[in-house]
Every structure is written in C-alpha cells, then in structure tokens.
Image (cartoon, rainbow, N blue to C red; front, side, top):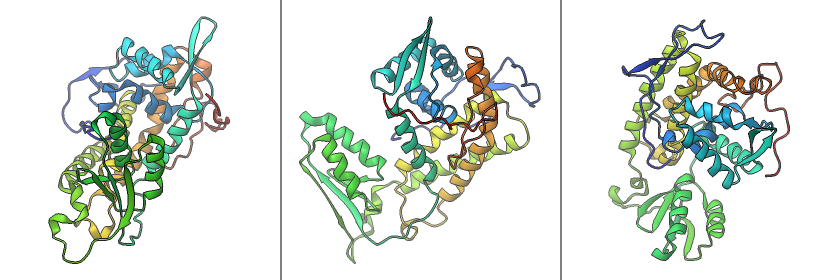
Length: 345
C-alpha cells in the first residue's frame, strides 16, 4: 500500500532470540526467530490478522478461539492489548463475527471479509503474471473535491492508487489501462459528482517531461524491486538449505507478502514499450511466488502449533494455499477450504 516500508527479510545480521522449540520442530536446522517484527503490518494489527487468516484459514467457516488469534499475533510482537483491540475493530467493521462458545470467545471471518480476501488474493497473486498488449490509450480521471469533503477525496485517491492510477497533476490522475468502469463505480459509491473519467492518447511532439508515465517514480520503484529481489533471494536460499524453522517461516512469509502487496499500487503495470530497459518486475515475481510456496508448509506447521494450544481439533484444519491460490491438504488430509464459504455476516 502507499507508504509501505520494505524491511529486511533476513539478508543481514539481525539480533536473534532463541525460540522455544515445540514438538516436531527439532528436525529443522535452526529454531531462531527474529527478535522483532519490523514490517509495516505490525503497525496495523487488524491488517496483519486478516493477512494471516487469508493465508492459513482461507475459506474455513469454523470459528477460532480469540485467544489463539491473540497468540498468533504475538508471534509478530503484537501485545495482547493491541491484538484484542484489533479483534474489536475488525468486529465493528463487520469483518469478523464474534460469539461465545461456553466460556470462550470465538471468532470467524464474515462473508464480507471472505469476499475481500478472495478479491485481494486474486489481485496480489496475479500481479505481474502476464504482460498485456496495449492499445496506446490512457485512462484519465479529473476531479475537484472541496476541503469539506476531504474524507471522500482521500478515499478516492486511495482507490485510484489501488486501480493503478497516479497523479500526473494535482487533480488529474492517469492509468495505462482501461479502468474507466471501475472508476465510475468508485465515484458512485463515494457520492462524488464533481469528477469525470475518460480515455485519451498522447500526441506526437510532447516533451518527455510531460509524458503520462512521468506520473510514477520508476527509478525509485526499481530500487524497491531490487531490494525485494535481494531479500527474497537470500531467504529462498536459506529455505532450500533447510535453515528456516517454522517460526521463522511464518514471520518471513508474512513479511514478504506484506512487501509484495505494495507493488500492485506502486507499479502502474506499464506496457513493455513504456518501461525502462531490464525492468525487474518479472524477476521479483518469480522470487516471490517460489519463496512464498516454499515456505508454506513450514509456516502452516507453526500456525497449527499455535492454534493447538487452545483447540487441537481445529488446529488440524490450518493449512496454506499456493501463489496460484491452490489449497494444500490440512493435517487430517482433508482438502482445506472444502467447506462452503461464509455467505452472510
């Protein structure tokens, strides 16, 4: 997302704490875990929790003990109070449904959250997969929203960035693909009438400084890609060498997807003919998908360990999906996610 920081993924020497190994973890070459989780998501525990549920409880309808979710967030340095505040906030926003099971508080994803995770997953994991042909046309959105409607203006800007737009000038945003239908929908949902969307092409003779692609800091984006490539490459080598424990796999995999999710917003997915030479997106995607998939079984193992402290019968259903959104079997051999998705809040 906008402003996401890109922390190191175990590419440099970082202070480590010895984690207490749990049963079945002794086969791994290391049981060390980074002392702190420095990802941006830890500053927003609600987003971190949704990320974890989307990765390891995707399309499950069974409610989990709230204490298990608090313990899961604790792996990332989130305090008990911050974790419970995140649960409360997600419940208020109708993304979680909280109820009682005996004396325990249990939590499940709402239908709305399930749809958000599905839509977000498709966008995150499909980003950079293929290069689409370009018709030479740009999508443009021009708007003038007064200060008294600042919240709507901020929401529109956020949605435009998610759709691949960037500001060419103060009130004129551009995207290289046809996004007009999505823009019209967003304008209607936000109740914004002082805006227009249209498509256009550049004309010969425009100064290079005035070309639409100058709306993005491609040099800065290349630096972010290069940093991601170095970090993910180092992590993949460690995993292939058997030097990543389930504890570290969970943290590193979550950190990596937190990093990667920022690229669909920052990268305009420009047509190949508009990109600088040797653009690193394809290399970054290949490292992301292979490393994410490689760490999946280890990370899911750690999630099952945590849930088993509070509900062994539910822990077996925690699993992972691949970067192709294909589910692995859970610990009982059942295809995870086979239960029907929640349909209502």
